Amino acid sequence: MAIKLKVTNIKGDECANKITKSILTMESDAKVDVNVNAKTVTVESAASEETIKQIVQSAGYTIEGY
Image 1 (cartoon, rainbow, N blue to C red):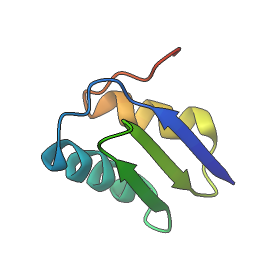
Image 2: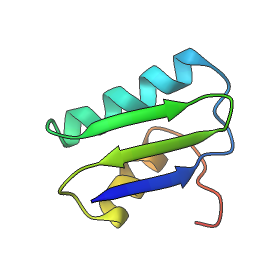
Image 3: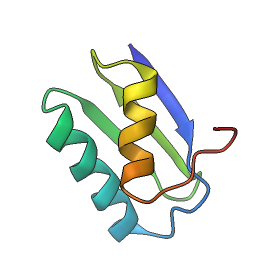
Image 4: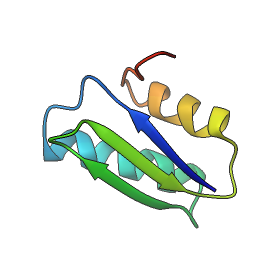
């Protein structure tokens, strides 16, 4: 299942790497794409949307509308 999140406080590649690493630590089989310019994170994973959102927030990022 693909999940696309708008993450409003992504600043650059360092943020993208931190988000990607956080998700892959919890969900090693996930496919993660972070678009810094669009401030979006797209994740393909067996994990629930709620789980992915919690991982992103735990890494210190804000999800629009969540």
